[in-house]
Length: 199
Image 1 (cartoon, rainbow, N blue to C red):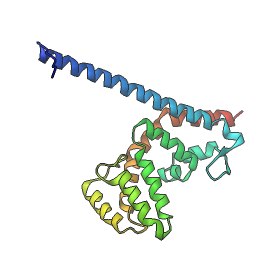
Image 2: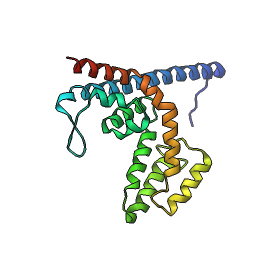
Image 3: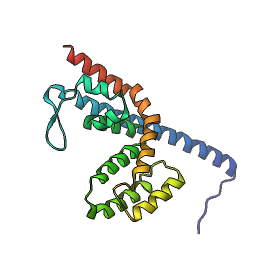
């Protein structure tokens, strides 16, 4: 079996690690720029619809007003009560690589409205996608809550994910939400809406 011989293996290993780190840093910066660009484009799409309204999934027009966007700053609850707010906040969380938090929260909200005979299937999907230790979109909850949620999901009720959902909500409220309110994305959207409404 052919092999490679590096006479200065330590030097090669070190410079390889440094090259890897530099490459990872560049990729991370590109990803941040890409997510930033996605958020910027999303917000650009939102602003022109102030007069015409925004089509939502249930096909009714929703007006994005200065008052609504200002209300988002009053509480995370008010932000998440707005479909437009959910969309803007989700794009912001994507830019921070933490969109699994809002996705889990929304999945739990949907789960609570599920008919009893469909609970088992939805509980299994939410558990596998967000809660189990090797979940693709694993949310940040402690070991004990993860275990307790796993037990509740095996014999599901409408409240099986309530504690985990509350924990993720508190995490967003204390961590991501204050950063969102200070973000250029939110402030620029608000400024553009205020400028358009004063014309």
